[in-house]
Figure 1 (cartoon, rainbow, N blue to C red):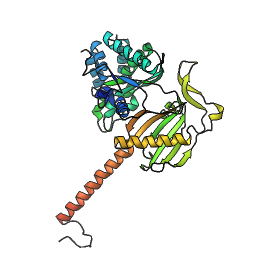
Figure 2 (cartoon, rainbow, N blue to C red; figure 1 turned 120 degrees about the vertical axis):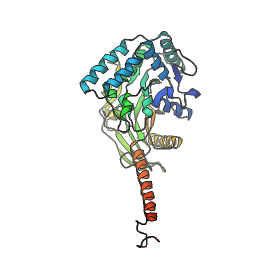
Figure 3 (cartoon, helix red, strand yellow; figure 1 turned 135 degrees about the vertical axis):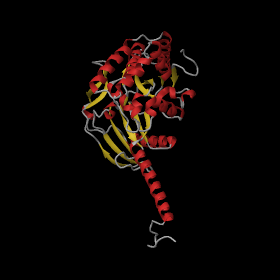
Figure 4 (cartoon, rainbow, N blue to C red; figure 1 turned 30 degrees about the vertical axis):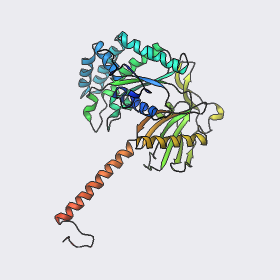
Amino acid sequence: MTESTASPFVLWIDDPAAVGSRLLGGKFGSLAEMTAGGFAVPGGFGITTTAYRYFLEAAGLAERAREVRARAVGADLAEVQAISAEFTAAIEAAPLPGDLEAAIRAAHAELERRTGQQGLPVAVRSSGESEDLAGASFAGQYDTFLWIRGAEEVLRYVRSCWAGMFGAAVLTYRPDSDPAAAAADHGICVGIQQMVEARSAGVMFTLDPVTGDRSKVVIEGCWGLGEGVVSGGVTPSRYVVDKVTFEVLKRDVAHQESMYSFDPAVAAVGLVPVATERCDAPCLQDGQIRALAELAKKIERHRGAPQDIEWAVSEAGDVHVLQVRPETVWSHRQAEQLVTERKSAVSHVLARFAGVGVASGGGRPS
């Protein structure tokens, strides 16, 4: 297999062909949709599911990958860990096809050209086909690497994302709705995206994730990168905003002594001290809270359902969309409730016609 227009190795998220393309997986497919919708998404490209499958075929690992998934089903944890370690090592050691490596290097150079920044820090994000599956949360099992610089490091972490498809956590993940999903031959895209040098970042929901109230936008944020909120490593500040008036109904400002940021001492993202004057200060100003709530409402309207959104605010005050995914917990509950109510209504009608129900006036139906 070689690269073609229909199945490219690289697909930019601002390419019209990217919208709705399964080549970008769930996460980057959503970002392509947001980009086309005019939302402020940092630029980037996906190393497509085609590229991933081409690599496995060229390395002679495609059939072995299917065997690994099949063997992991029903195996105990120790055996899965051994299977995983052996196969991920094989992926890390396998040579990259020359044409695929050239395509990735060229795209990375183009991203640096577009941004005007040599040594551009990027996020390297796994974006799996399985993230689109109803009732499965594979997105939480895959890897993301932040603040990666240079083509060599990008190539290294692309491999790590591919290998992550066969991590023990992924191989043992069993969605309740589809236990066979973990063994399926899903592909993965690896997204390369410009890092936002975040002043503050976090997540927001277009409903209250505690109560399911759709009249609210709930924003959780912290100083530094949103990894602190997503990973649970930092206690976030929390803002509850009215979705109509954009009034801040509740604010809980957390004391924050450390934040996730690029640490020059180790040349990697890690926990660093928060400036003393910021430890008890809100990570968002009121204007930024309103801008985020308005953005959340627009995204929900654009996608037609409640959303879970990752965001970042730069030091310059610009608001960026980093990830968008459907909210699943309350949406799923409401769908179940609707089905139950419909079943109940149908049962009531059938019971009336069968003569076993009680009419509203207390007598039997005539």
